[in-house]
Image 1 (cartoon, rainbow, N blue to C red):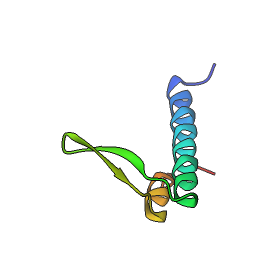
Image 2 (cartoon, rainbow, N blue to C red):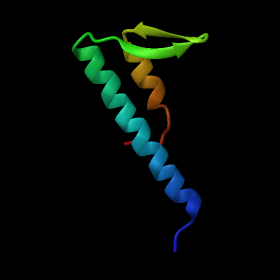
Image 3 (cartoon, one colour):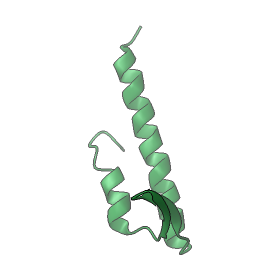
Length: 61
């Protein structure tokens, strides 16, 4: 059996890929995303930098 930490890393990578796809879709269609900031919801358009920050992990293909 493999290490439980390995399964956690796989899950984290897949969650980051999914989030990057959501950001890319919102950027493509110019749709703002709700973001919780300073105790309130703000709607912001994502940038390419936001997508790149999610994929900083070197193990993400």
